Amino acid sequence: MSRHIRKLQGIVREIIKTNEIKEDKEGNKWRKCIFIVEIIGFSKRTPNEKLPEKLKGAKVKVIRWCCFDWHYKIGVRTTLTHEETEAVLRGKLDLTHI
Amino acid sequence: MKPNFERLITALFLEDEPDRVPFYDLLADPEVIEAITGEHLIAGSFISSIHDAKSALKGDQKVIRAIKHDIRVQVKFYSKLGYDYIPLSIPTPFPRTNLLLADDTAPLRRPKRAWQDEYKGMIETREDFDKYPWPDLTDIQEVFLFLYEIARRELPNGMMIIPLTPGGVLENVMWLMGTVPFAKALYKDPVLIRNMFEKVGKVISFYCAICAECDMVGAMTMGDDMGYKSGPMLSPETLRKYVFPWHKRCVENVHKHGKPFILHSCGNIKILMEDLINYVGIDAKHSFEDVAYPVTEYKELYGDRIAILGGVDMDKLSRMPKDQFIAYVKDIIRKCAPGGGYALGCGNSVANYIKLENYLLMLEIGKKYGRYPIRSL
Image (cartoon, rainbow over all chains, first blue to last red; front, side, top):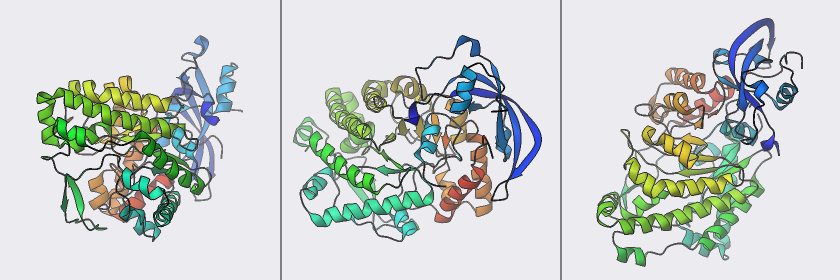
């Protein structure tokens, strides 16, 4: 069950706004951003997973599209997708192209 | 947006990937469900306790049809409004008559509003304790499974069930004893107090265990009000001695099945939060009130360890003008949603005294302004 899929979490340290903007069906404008995330561990969903030493404090770049003011908040926790998590565990830290 | 329980479970696991903030409410009053769905709930008039339910289920087709109808209406209500679960509870296993009735002044009024008689208990002495018709665990299991099976069949794809305990451990003891006799017995008859908590604690923890075993149960909620605006109703020492060990057992029975445990507890219980997080092991806290224990403050203090649910103030839901209310709800989302671990909802419950316009507006704002940053567009 998806409940047991492992997901890494980190703190958003920086958000780099790109010039790419798209509009959704409701007319909201979404801006493509690069989030720099400092990895802190796995989500509570998999409490027994241990973060490999080499990844403690590692900074990962991920793409997120933002729309509302609160999307740009720094210092908050964020969760990587399962695909991003597995890529980071394989040692890939720049995930802006996956 | 279709129902998707994963939306809520990500919040309970402190993740922030859902498409929007999920919605969480403890329950909706029947009057609200009727007003939104345009249908009447009918089973309540037949069943007021587990004893009634047990005898009805032996073959009273009229009651069984009424129960099925009511669950169908509830599913309609919660799915239509954007919730990803339905709450499910059994009638009380601890019937009592120490209630005071008063006229209801709510916009969607019911014939009478019931209040706890604080001075009188069903059980004030050892004799009362021995005479009380304590429930049979098998009856509780039978009634729950009957309701669960109906609910399971009615659930749309993507939705799950969050059972709600029929009152909490402390609540049921205080309701049965009456606040004043309970307070006196704490000093005069600690053995009676301990026996009361054992009787009630066993039932509530058993209920948690049987609920959590069921496949379509996604999480468990216990409502156990422990505080006033100024602080807990009992000292932390008393709660640690009599209440928290039972709470912990309830949580363990749910965690055994990998499911999260939500605690709804009214009152300013900041002084108890470390016990609840570290010892009891709750996954989420619900019930907030702006004047004394605002959701935004709890999110800031505890949001890195547990999910924070609801918190849209009941007074503002009841009275705040529309324009101010929109700004107010957006501000809660702005402060609580970043990073996940938050579900939008009422500070207490979808009570019959709140303004329906504000309630529906809150959900609309959640659907629009509560959308999370997304991986790809």
